[in-house]
Image (cartoon, one colour):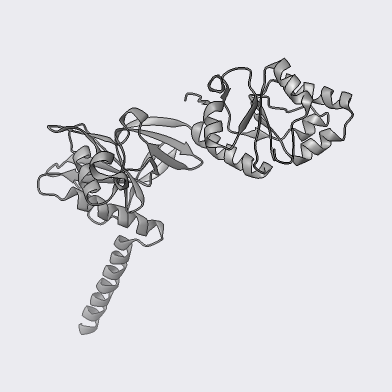
Length: 318
């Protein structure tokens, strides 16, 4: 699987960061791993297990430690840090803490970006890790449609021409939201999957015979969504006479994407079936099951009780 990176420019747009010095454009400085580091041990002289690919965060503890050192010792320790050439060094709590003059000098000497933030150290680290986890997450692109129905992210798959886009339009007309049509970018963050649309085709749907539709302009902002969790996969296929289709739902199938298993439902398509209504029911049922209620299992429990009761009554009559 390919490795991804995110530019410092995007990070500064999504997280509260101000530039003190940068050796080149922020769009040219890339971060390749999602972890960040507070280099307290490194500044204290312990240089083992230091990952120079991580963003280096200096908070109140590190700055107070450096202020207690002599000017020569502080320069030496900071020279060691900047000499590792991390993607950037970030000073937190900039309203209280000013970067030492040596920092700017050494950033220029080693060509390392120096930034600062007003945020508390833990808050900034949490924000950075959250953004990095999303931007650097493993990802794939799938042909399909992603919609949000009753708060459930539904990935609709099926052969070209089966009616996925038409189904999405009908769901939008019913008050649900379009996330992506035709191409769905899927990312894995922890054990969850998130889907969005490529920027070029975001909020557009192509309907054969009609053309390209801007859903946001036609139906309003409430009809679209930038991204969504993916909680269930629905596969549309032509109705096949003689094929067995699940009519109880006791044994749910699963579909694996990027190592994450999702509930999987196959819906046969033929004229006269209200697919939008079926998808809405699938969304509500999936939410019920996530909250611990399985209607098929409840039905079978009642059925078994009734059969046991009838058998007992028949035995008593003998």
